[in-house]
Length: 186
Image (cartoon, rainbow, N blue to C red; front, side, top):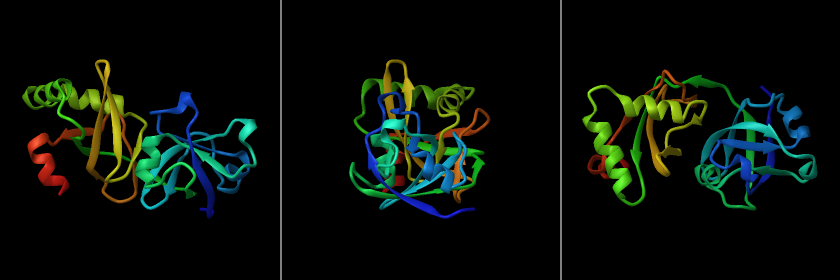
């Protein structure tokens, strides 16, 4: 595996928001021996992962990486902060444990209650489908589109626990409801 490149975190292209994509210029992609869509590790004050795609030609040669606010938050950086990017191996996630964050809205409460009361894990399959292809590390924030809302969820743990895992349709997704969530995050 080749080394790392440094870049400055900047706003994502509008079309990439919420898709777990970080963009690099072709020179950096070549230096890291990457192909479009491969998984990269992004290190700021924290570490996260994303799918790598090339920047648009107008951004080439500026030493930037375009990523959305969620990826920047997961990496512990703001717009204009430096990040270190490297190619990283990723395994299929067997299990992901999530908990809701943010305000307890009627929609989020309904989602949690419906998930908890379901005889068959409909919401688990729904969440796995919604997050399919998303690379995650423990402690990452992820967003699930539910009805017309976006639910912010925290990855409490995953299997395998080390490194980067990619959520797939076969990933078992479990949810820690509100009350247990505050104890689990503390």
